[in-house]
Image 1: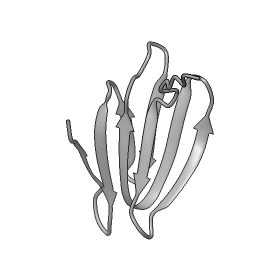
Image 2 (image 1 turned 135 degrees about the vertical axis):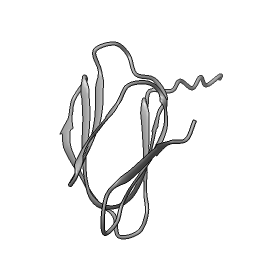
Image 3 (image 1 turned 60 degrees about the horizontal axis):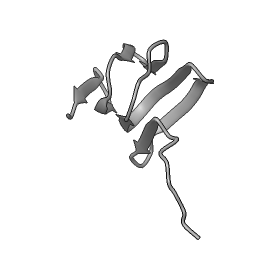
Length: 85
């Protein structure tokens, strides 16, 4: 018997310790995350037309426009974000 694997996931979310993250909206078109504090690493493998990925922070909103790996860090003070690839 042969097994085939196929990637069904479009996203991977990794969190650091003491991260406060809420999934505020999740359906076939939207992934919306609320990051109050801590560190989030989001990898978007594909982003088909019409789909939205958003990270809401205390200081603003990060909208992902294309596949890649994104690092968002919320500490005391302003939020920092960086696209890693």
